[in-house]
Length: 177
Image (cartoon, rainbow, N blue to C red; front, side, top):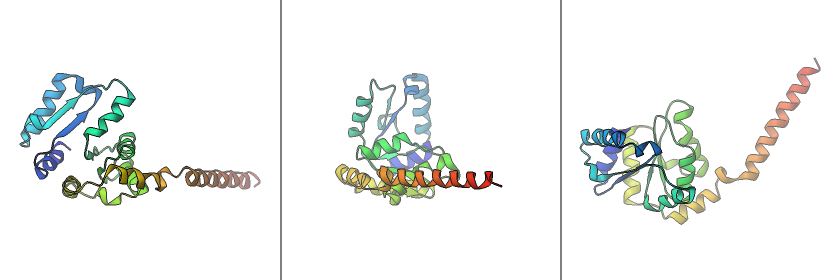
């Protein structure tokens, strides 16, 4: 992932990477991470490391400093992907071969952003570079998200209710035998 993120930074000159995790409060971990990026030609000045954020409001406000969210892999984000979209930030994800690596695919397809899904690391870098050059406005992202299947609670509830009814009917039929 570090190699791919480094390639992404190289494909978008002048870009920076913000990494936030409570574990990054550990300076030794931060130094090791910066050393990994340095192995790929990325100087420490292009990486900003942040540890624990004081509150949810401050956490969400941090998205104002982000132009593009780079999803993690092989284990994709879930809450962070939804938060980024909600805050109007595009998310680039890499489609994996198991559930943990396909969550980003499910979320972006349901939200109507399938063109931000990469099938390999080269596409991931290309997609991020394309978004860096031509980022949709945050309001457009939020508007598309608000009208998507991902946030359609009525539709989701109806589908879930139908599935539960079907399961109950199957159980009742089987118990009559």
